[in-house]
Image (tube, rainbow, N blue to C red; front, top):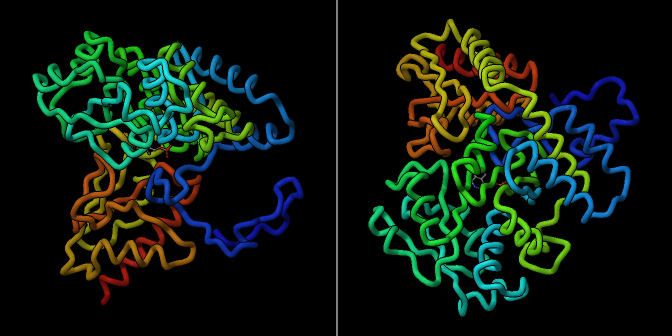
Length: 393
Ligand SMILES: *Cc1c(COP(=O)(O)O)cnc(C)c1O
């Protein structure tokens, strides 16, 4: 895919990846941040390019985008954040501001002297919780429902739930019910949990006071954008902590064209159907598998993880006595080749790389949902080349 088309219309601009010598890849992995997540659909790219041409008043754009999104996504209020991680920070800052009636400049330095406890299940601790801790709060970990009930104190400001957690025995319903009994807001991090499309309103409808989704994952918006959705008073406090104000969110700027891009991505995503998306991803998986029919012992399987990356993934397993190459080596071969292809990082991994995606050392995992039209044929061809060669070896 590095071959430039014969004529490039001036409107498309110069190819700075080529100019900088940066390799364009085929993403057969998924919505990984390190692989620049998703590609915006054409309608979203066009909306971004158009919005980039005009200055506007930032406050007016933030307010209008928020109101539009809240109406479409059936929640009280919405904000375009600089990704889900920034929404975690802004939501935490909001809960601190409301509980302590403090100044935004008190976060994080004065927080140790305030109400500052965030409840979380031990099995929900994850890398992204640093985005909560950067507000100066402290986690109180619980495991059982009984521990949760008795963990609330005069210092509790928020109860955080990691939606795709594979551990943790307390349900969403109990998490909300008990917190609300104590008047404490609940935050659900559902960053990677669309599709299904309806999750965009399911969790606020369930009673979560704050919910975040990453903009650059399943919704295919700008990679530096995300959504914070929820209760009006908390969302106003989140906006007060956000840029252009000099609080903890000052560095979490979303450019005007990216705010517009996030709104356009929501419009694009709401124009899709779960069945339509699934059918297209299955078609891609089937097309790749069809190209590998003559590889001895190879067995393709299509799986849909239950939550997070909830789309068809193609798994390939084979007898390594007959096809003499490990899945990990196949991954390196595809990365080295031209065009360079990234398979899902769970490929050949004993521990897995993502919630819900099956993984073991003997399985190749092909993520098909971030492929551009036609790229499944290139992925199938390269897999065939590498596996057929290993069969002859
Ligand atoms: C991806 C992800 C994030 C971070 O999202 P960004 O939009 O990249 O900031 C946070 N939480 C979870 C569970 C995620 O999967």
